[in-house]
Length: 393
Ligand code: NAP
Image 1 (cartoon, rainbow, N blue to C red):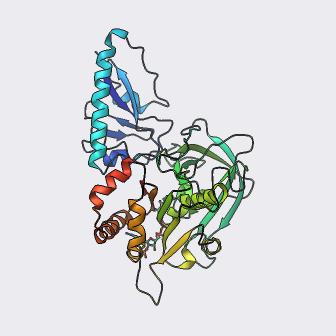
Image 2 (image 1 turned 90 degrees about the vertical axis):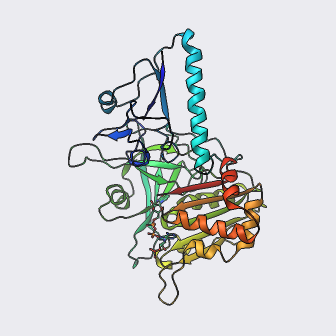
Image 3 (image 1 turned 180 degrees about the vertical axis):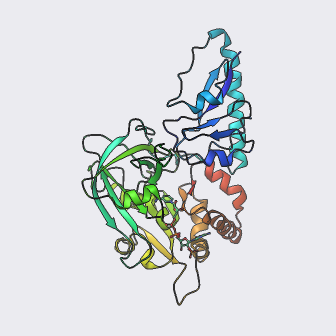
C-alpha cells in the first residue's frame, strides 16, 4: 500500500522559514541544513504551498514507508520516485485525486488559486541550484537613491557570459552569499526580483538587473551592494511561475509597489517599451517611498513617457505634506481602477512590503463599492483567471 508523502526539495529551498510559520499543524521543522515535513503530522491542508517563493515545498513521492525526519534532515537532494507496481496504480490515482481536491479547496479559501496571466510566456524554473549555480560576473553596481539619502538602494547588473540564464519579467533569482555562518553552515540563499526585461538590460545582452537595498546586518544585501565590476556571483533559479507579465499588448496593467518592490515593474515597463511600443493596453503605477530621494530610480522614472507608464509617485515622509501611502492615492482615481478591474484584459500586481497588502485590499474594496462592484467576489475570480498577483515580503 502506497501513501503520498509531502517533501521539500533541499536543492531549491532557500530556508526562508515561510512554510514553518505557515503550517497550522506544526508539521514543518528544520535543522541547520534542511526544512522538512513530518509525515506523521502533515494533514495535506496545503496552506504552505502558495506562500513558498521557490516552489521547493511542492514535492511529492508515493512511498510504501514514509521517509523519517532524520533521513530528510540529512538529504542534499530529493530521492527518486521508487518504482510502483502497476497493480497498485488505482490506489495511487485515488490518493492523487484526494490531494488535488484538497489543494483546490485550500486555494479557494484564500481568495482563489493564483495562476499566471493567460498570455504570459512559459517560465523556466529551478534551472540552477545551490549545488549547481550559474556563475555571473558583475557588469555594474549603481546607487539609485540620492547620495545623501539614508536609503542605499543599488541597481546591480549580472552578466552570464556563455551560460544561458532564462528569465521572464516578474521572476526572481537566488543569490548565494559566499562564506559560511558562524556555525559553519553555508549562508542561506536570498531571493531578489529581476528588474530588467527578459532579453537583458540591453537587447540580447544575456544579463539581468537586480534592485537591492542595503539592510543593516543583512548578509546578502551587504554582499551585493559592495560588489565591484568584475566580481563573480553564484546565482540560482529562476523562480516564480505565476507573478509574470502578460504578453498581450491589450493588457491593462496596474502595478502597486513600495520601495524595492518596484523591481519587477521596471522589467514590465521595459518589456512593453521594447516588445509593444504604442500598445493599446495601459500601464499604471502607484509607487510609494518615504521621499523622492529614497524612491529607487526616481530620476530615470521621470523620463519615462506617460504614454508608456502613468506614474503616481506617493510619499510618506515629506516635511510639509501629510503622510500618504499608495492605497490612499489609489482612492483618488477610483473610476479608472474600477474600469480596469472589470476588463478581462485588466491585471493587478502588488509588490513590496507585507504591510501594504491589507491596505491595498481595503482600497480596492472601497473603490469597487463606489462603482457597485463586489471586491470579495471579484478578487478570487481575478486570481483564478491569472489577473491578480501579490508578492510581498
Ligand atoms: P521602505 O523604504 O521601507 O518603504 C517604502 C514605502 O512604503 C515608505 O513610504 C513606507 O512608509 C511605506 N509603507 C510602510 N508601511 C506601509 C503600509 N502598510 N502600506 C503602504 N505603504 C507602507 O521599503 P523597502 O525597504 O524598499 O521595502 C520594500 C519591500 O519590498 C521589502 O519588504 C522587500 O523585501 C520587498 N521586495 C523587494 C524586492 C527586491 O527585488 N529587492 C522584490 C519584491 C519585494 P513609512 O516608512 O513612512 O511608514
